Length: 272
Image (cartoon, rainbow, N blue to C red; front, side, top):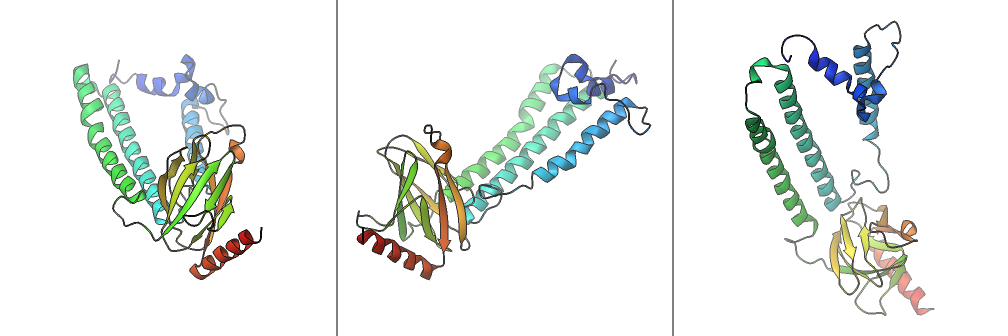
């Protein structure tokens, strides 16, 4: 029985694989190594050995990594991600703590199940979830610029199967580019996104969040690159057989170089 010193909890924790629980099947019936005679201790060490590998993998980054921000909007998203991670970890620790308290401590065996449900299922999670919700709303307001003035530069982006057309102005005579978006570094640019056919999704992970490109409707999102560089962008909404190839590149230029690029695009457009 629980609390009687018969090691019931230890056996339950390490031998869940005997009941077909897939999470623990990798630790089931493992032969001892290096003279180890305690199978349970070996299983625990095997599990603990995986933790550093998992920690290293979390440090992976790349051109489409939201955890490698290159602008204030993406930094807010990464910050929110870490808040969610630690909030979830706190909740997990509370629940696991209650689990071991209820199974390993004899004096809690007389507490009614309804009380465990109220405290473990409501009282503990609600403050954590409320804090996460408030943080998400605050970051969302910042991301979509609800409290900021409209930037001076507005770039129109039209999605179509399976390309992105960028226009740097309001009229058809303004400079255009295809699958390459040019922006000035250090300045906030508003991107007006629309679609020619089906619903797509405009996403530059290292600069901002996602926003849908909807036929007949214009949605807006703001980009700002902290420094000059090249950043990957993708369509984040499945849109057909060419979806995986519907990528684009964002190039952030120094302000003077940006104006020169627009002039080059305009000259090339006039000559065609």
